Amino acid sequence: MSGQKTITLGGGCFWCIEAVFELMPGVDQVVSGYMGGSLRNPSYREVCTGSTGHAEVVQLTFRPELSTLEDILDVFFLIHDPTTLNQQGYDVGTQYRSVIFYHDEEQHTQVRAYMDRMIASNQFAKPIVTEVAAAEIFYPAENYHQSYFRNNSEQPYCQAVVAPKVMKYLTKYGTRS
Image 1 (cartoon, rainbow, N blue to C red):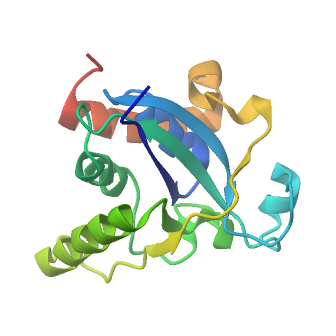
Image 2: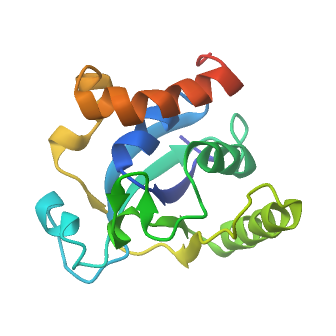
């Protein structure tokens, strides 16, 4: 589809981020995977060790006329804590870092401006530690990670960690149209 854009976001476990963005209007594709590390074609098991340098991320393909980059960033900062270095809840390690991988210079400029506004707003009690970096090679996660919450919503981790993030999004933005 013409006019589509891509952005890659990491904010803890990719299951959490993926579950929310699958609901967002204008987001056409959400793929869980890995970015930002040194190992080629890493596996989930390797990334979980924290030794590869990769972050668990979701790569979004979206239509800016329906959901702008700012809309996407608003949701991203709603559903994760950008003030904890290499940690989201009980998930600890560099693979769970808060990171935005931009895909072109226009996105880089928009992300930096957004981050500057976020910092100036003092919305968070602690400093924002979200990394902003150029997109690198994206490695899709194994098939069983894709649409994980949708396929495993009764699993205890999904109930305890993913479902509250989905509810937070739905409370603020409503259901997908």
